[in-house]
Length: 295
Image 1 (tube, rainbow, N blue to C red):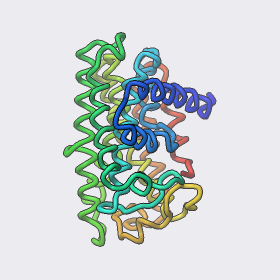
Image 2 (spheres, rainbow, N blue to C red; image 1 turned 120 degrees about the vertical axis):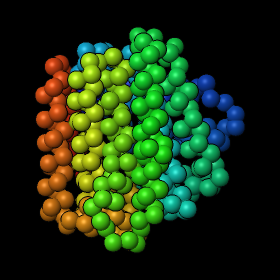
Image 3 (cartoon, rainbow, N blue to C red; image 1 turned 90 degrees about the vertical axis):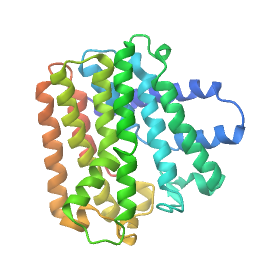
Image 4 (cartoon, rainbow, N blue to C red; image 1 turned 180 degrees about the horizontal axis):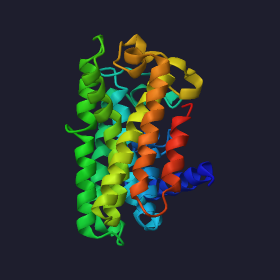
């Protein structure tokens, strides 16, 4: 299959929903602009696409859940806005553009992130946005995403990441950071697609394993790109992890072993799909695509 075409088609569907949804968001105009600025700053829309692909692999039509998949991008974007703030990573560039606080100021950037996170759960608790989805399935998916986003997932990982700056890396802490900060929401994106469809328990478990391993591979590749990447290509300052003494895979294991570990995580992710009986080609190809990404 043409994975680039697949990604582009699903990305376009999600972004068309953004445009439609924000017609209903009014005053204050600057808050709406700040939300859209970061949401439309680029990005591959990997989390929504994974959710759509998972739903399809269970037998569903992905058009039925675009609003719920789009909510994942709202959550991801909020996390990037807050990560970039001076109190956290203090980054000036994101996806090759000035970060939100550089354009709108710190207060409005914080509020834009808050609004995106909250609005995501407005979407994830509105059964009218996806009438083909059973309300109990929607509730289960929303709960999974909430757990992955907060103090059991992404926020815990970010907190530990900040606490671990300038510390000598250790395996347990590194594993905790990567499983929570990045892998948790990627895993939930995949699992949510199966939950929205009402997939069998074995299929949901397989999607969970796929998403967990894919999320770990994604973060290892991110760590490698921070060392080897070019600022203009990766869209943020290269070498920032080393400058801040972040706890990363290359710092712990070196580049060669980190590459081997990323490949092993992808292999485990793909192997998990053996338990899914339907259309898993997009998920399989996505795993290999993300392994070879350059930004």
